[in-house]
Image (cartoon, rainbow, N blue to C red; front, side, top):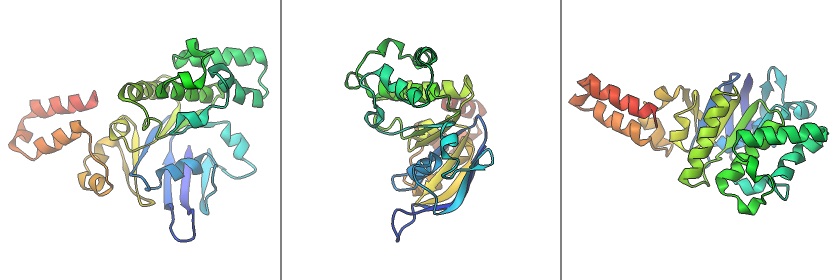
Amino acid sequence: MIEFKNVKFSYNTKDRAVKDVSFSVADHEWLSIIGHNGSGKSTIAKLLVGLIEPQAGEILYDGVKLEEKTINDIRHKVGIVFQNPDNQFVGYNVLYDIAFGLENKQVPRSEMLELIHKYTKLVDMEEYLSREPETLSGGQKQRVAIAGILAMNCDIVILDEATSMLDPEGTEEIIALIEELHTKYNKTIITITHDLNLALKSDHILVMKEGHLIKEGKPEDIFEERDILLSSNLDMPFSLKAIYEVSKTELNNNKELMDALWEYRSKM
C-alpha cells in the first residue's frame, strides 16, 4: 500500500505544483495519473521516488514514511521509467546498463548474469545484450529500462510518460508489456500519462488539474465525466466518444448496439 497524504510541493515561492493531494495505491493495483502538461502529475512521480521532498504532508510505503533515513530501503521496492529513454542509459551496451544497478547492490556475478538473462528474456531483449543504446529504438530502450527495474526486484513500477516519445508500434509494445507485468507478474503499476487509451486499461485513475486532484475513480466512471476531461484539456478516446454520442440519441435504447460498442471499447 502506498499512501500520499495531504502532500504539497512548489518549485518556487509563488505557485504550487502539487496542492494538498491525497490518494492511495493498493498492492498489485494499476493506477493511472492523467492530466495535461503542468497539472502536477510528473511532480507526483518525482515525489513518489524521493527525487524531491514534500513541503507538507507525507508519503508512506506499507506504513513507513518516505524520508532520508528510509529512502534507500524504499527505493529497493520502487523503480521508475522516465519519458526520455536516452536519459536512463548509463552503460555502453544493454548488458552493462542493467548490470550497473546490480553491481551497486553487490550482487554476485553469477546471480547478476542470471537476473539479466531472465529479465531481458521477459521483455524480449535478450538477443540485444551487446547492442549499444544508439542502435535501439525508443520502445527497445524503454524495455531495457523496465528490465533493469525488474532485475533490481522492484515490486512497484512507475512509468512517467513512458510512451509519449514512441511511435505507434513502440507504444503498443510497451502497453502490452505493462499489461503483462500487471496481470501475470502482479506488479503494482503507476502510469503517469496524458494518453487516455492507456489510462483506460488501468484499475484506477486520478485526474490532475493545475496541481489539484479533481477526480478519481474507475476508468468507466472517469470517462463518463466528459466535462471534467475537456476542462482538463484531455480528450476522450474514440471508442468512448462513439458511446457518448450514441447515448444522446434514440439509438441508446438499442441494447445490442450499445453492448457491441462497449465490447469494442473493452478491446481497445
